[in-house]
Image 1 (tube, one colour):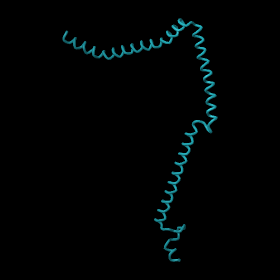
Image 2 (cartoon, helix red, strand yellow; image 1 turned 120 degrees about the horizontal axis):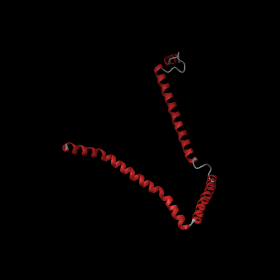
Image 3 (cartoon, rainbow, N blue to C red; image 1 turned 45 degrees about the vertical axis):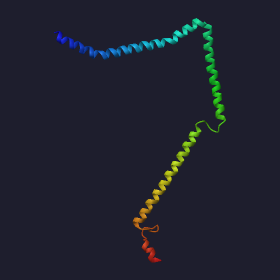
Image 4 (cartoon, one colour; image 1 turned 90 degrees about the horizontal axis):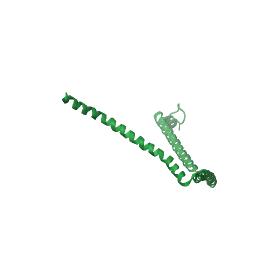
Amino acid sequence: MRLISVPLKLLIRLVLLPLKVVLATAGLTFRAGFKAGTLPVKGTALAVRSFGVKAVLLFAAGVALGVYVGRRLGSAGVELAEASYPGDFGSTVDRVAAATSAAVAEVVADAEEEAEAELEAAIDTALGVTGGELGVDTADDGEAG
């Protein structure tokens, strides 16, 4: 009986080993994430105890005021910068895109005209140059002259 149970136990342990490793890793990462998540709370509590509630509240108010004033000054700076240029900052890209699309359209139009001219020349060659009328042949023009 021992001869069968030892390999069977080893096989079960080998099958369960990756599962144990995954669960241990997940538990480790969960604990590390939880510890990292508690750091801001612990840091704030330590700062409040060290500096006092009044100092921390004044610091938070200063940060809020700085954000508010910074956004107001930033928007005024953006308006000033946009007013000093003929267009907005993205207009260069728009002008390049418009010029590129115009150039592409011109090339396409030229290619279409060239294709039409080649097609017309091929039709004229196949039918014979008719001088614009289908009933008249080039040989007739030579005889009439």
